[in-house]
Image (cartoon, rainbow over all chains, first blue to last red; front, side, top):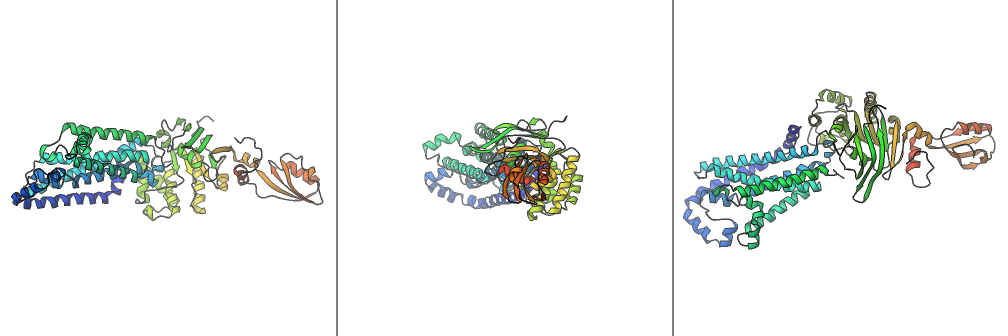
Length: 265
Length: 306
């Protein structure tokens, strides 16, 4: 039963997924291929970034732009990659609970001898698998890419970065899952999840400048995942716990809501 | 009946917020019988069927499948149930073949032989993408999906909508074969003739409330029938007034028109004594009863209507 459902969901979205994957590899390839130019004019870049206003450097988390890890953190792990993982997480999460209800296919699906929690669990596991696969793809393309241009980034740091992004995607998957389970509406779930992620991103980015935002950092999903600077410093156990606990709580609430839902009423 | 009912509804009540869906619906469907479920659009038929399938949570009361409250555990009941929703949506990007295989896999059943049979019978081209199918062909896929595991209970929400007459009669046969092997059927419809043709008992809802539940033949007896009597001479309508169940609505010299409830034998005997030459009456159908029960205005007193 699980296999059949996961296979159908994956087949339906194979094309979209291929697009995200290609985009991810292309962005990594592009950014990595530019690095030798940066490295060769290290002095110039250092001077340039040091001339940036302090606020600007802090928002973009520019501290060591010319080192391999610092460069990748600024160029890839600050905005582009996080939002690829968030986009996938939120889109799949929004569909998990709400898609079939909105399409009307839930009527037959839920009339089958399968519990709702089992159906939802399959969809959640499928999303996690997709996020994990993107993480593996990212790790592979970074490992290959950095070695081609002689960027020295330890593989375990690359893995730490990919794990952080997977968790970030999974947090906003869980947000979309909960809103979808409560509302039965895919658009509402997707919008809520992306909206919250953007707000969290703004708070996270401006935290170095605004004391209030800084005080909120311990509850910010971006801090849980990217705040430990995974590419330079690795993962942080406390932050990871925050992320996984949040995912667990949101998923638990989603299951409760979905099991009690009046479908398509 | 020794076996428990396939469906038992106990004062099933559903409010959508403050809006009434249905109130105090109680009836049961036994193995081997077809219960027709009639009501005008928006009367609550679909609400009842969807509560039976566990898609909606009743506000109070309960729906049982094979003796188990579906809110407690619907899985066992659904295992033995085939459901055809009123508004059927299939996975548009699948072919009929992969759709049916998917449903079978979700049921953890090998239904391939039965799928072959049913698709042949209903002339379903399984290689076609569902998005390219006509409404009627999609409905046929829905029918196959509901019957392919030889369920003990079929819950069908207006199953023949969109089917052409030939396919409809094939559907009738399939339904009769199912009841012959002991399956129970709950069939909602607003087509009187369909219910009359297939059902042995019928439940009628109007505005969310049950107005009747009885055997079809009993219902027919309860239906008022317009009868026009022509006599060879002028008659005094009062001479017919004491015939049980007959109410004169119009008297025009030698022609008396009235409505009749129940058997007409007594009326005809009396009329013959008075010089009856001809009697005309529209065909007696459930349709008239249905209209009597759900139309606004004075409702004739009825025996068991709740």
